[in-house]
Image (cartoon, rainbow, N blue to C red; front, top):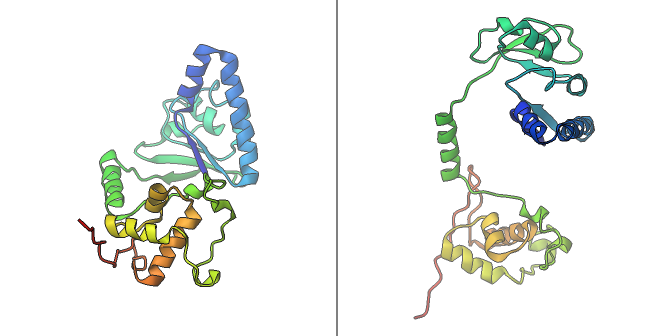
Length: 228
């Protein structure tokens, strides 16, 4: 799990305008989260463009020992982040200093810059070539369909018995020409495990193909005949 708080100073500033005590409570909660995150395997990243002592407090620094500083305007700002100067001498454009526990000196590294246009192109490509596959079953663990008590075995594990909704699911898939677990979850209001099992049964029956390298399946069965 990765948690990113972008522009931490702006968040604290907005809260301080309402109630300064509220911003202190938020800081205490973030510190507590940082303490728990180490044990739970959560990666916490806090970013700010204003490295002042009222934002990056001693309490925050003591609980987030790994720090990265980009080019700053003064040695004071560098000391606020890294407890020493040098960040004011960086070149910008991804040039940064990295500090981590266990290493006595700063490490100078360079980060890649990805502009908005490139991000848009990558996202558009992924949306066009991949199906979403959310784990909605986590939220529907106790749904009325009884998904919380269902196993994850395939048809052979259940003695060849197909799901009661299998025929309806086949009709949906062959009509929409879309074979994805998330689509079945939305259309049939069932959990992830049940939808995944139905798709696996369709694959075993030749209704849909196996997943390709992009994680998509092709619908092999013809569209259902509609009686007029």
